[in-house]
Length: 439
Image 1 (tube, one colour):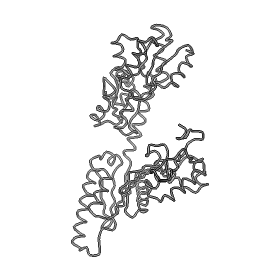
Image 2 (cartoon, helix red, strand yellow):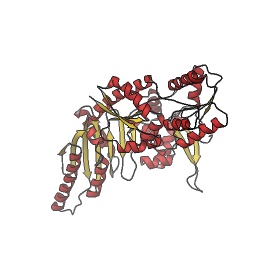
Image 3 (cartoon, one colour):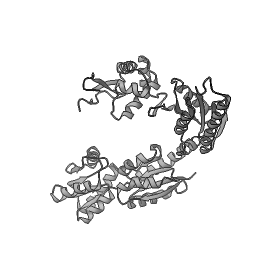
Image 4 (cartoon, helix red, strand yellow):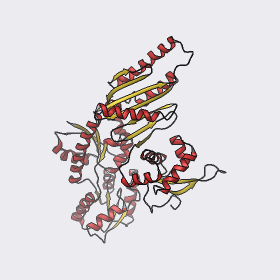
């Protein structure tokens, strides 16, 4: 099995990775995507998705920029931290002695301090750029240049190829951090394993169970019923063709479909949620749609039954996807989708949940809501909105989790000028973490 990898980075690191990658040439096909400036990464990804199994980024910033444009499970980066910094410092030592004062970007102060401590360079004084994430190249160039010309530092160290080239043009003493051969080799080994895992994941069997309810009224004629059934089957046939699957009518408005996980996930033109919405518009009824993935046909069908049963709690139906790991993704009419795990592998969490009478699925849903809000906290109003429950029930759940040590109050928010403040809870956090109010 040959895995095609989109290799994204500046020319020097791409060339280095290609050289190391010859060890895996029978398993990995490295397609280079070279950029002059890291700001070009997003455009590169958008224009080169066809036929790529995995994306491999040669640096942290390129990875952060590219990740929103590819599935997280299909992206890897080559780390350039401690060992790569040691390699760079060694190069600086060979060229001009131990650097006493130097500026550095991309790494955190903790990472730099740890490396200097390991090398016992206790007299070296680094000036670390305060932002470890993406920073425009112009800002980094100005950061290093101003420190160098003011005499505060003698040497500059950067991760960014474009910054390195520009500082060289300015006559500034600069060194570039590039990945070590060992880190490249380890990442390529991981890419090989991940590619095989994804291949088997894509070949999993997919079972889709569909029920459309409350479609026909008492006064509906047999002709109207037949006409609507034909339109519904035509729509389902279009979807089935897109996923290269098999359609089996099991009743007038109930259907089973079978395909593979890869065919469904690659089907961006006609994804399941679009079918769900089209059926709702066509029939005016409630659509109950369950999709199950499994290693066997039996496992896939069992997961599809589980997914379909979860739509039964709502009269207006829904779309639920469940896989063999217990991961569940739910989408209901007029709500954003929500992904969570149906079970937990953490024994301590399971025991605490049992003591307070909250299921693992409910707890994982609440954790997922917290992640989706982007606030690192949730209120009862958030749970009521996302999980379609009453505020009273949401308050009860949060109180039970707090009692079990799985949630704690970290602040308040006022919903309106005259409204009562709402408590903000952080779910599943370690004791001693600072609250929102204390920051």
